[in-house]
Image 1 (cartoon, one colour):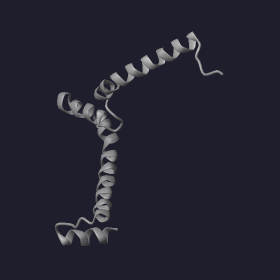
Image 2 (cartoon, helix red, strand yellow):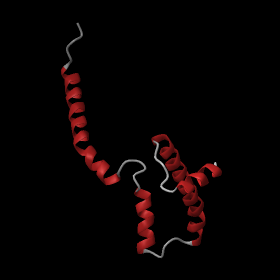
Image 3 (tube, helix red, strand yellow):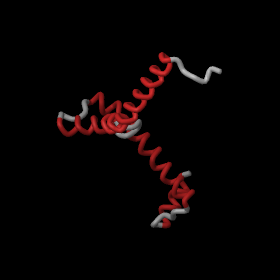
Image 4 (cartoon, helix red, strand yellow):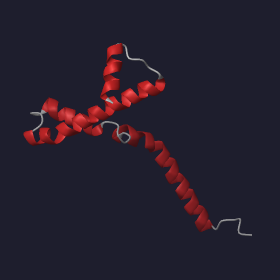
Length: 103
């Protein structure tokens, strides 16, 4: 009652399984080489440019500077929110006052 596969369907299924098996074997290699999203690939390229070339051009600096500032502010805000939600106190009580006043 339709529970068996034709020889052609069986061959296609076997090929599909073989391809899936190969992909699973090579998936770690692809991830190791290319990395996951947001794993810092472009950051490494930028650092290599700074170290091994003449650094960033004036246009590059103008382009990246606001991004760096924005990322810094966003990261600090995330850390402060996490400290609050995790109950982590500031080491210096004056810093907490400054944080509360700046909100």
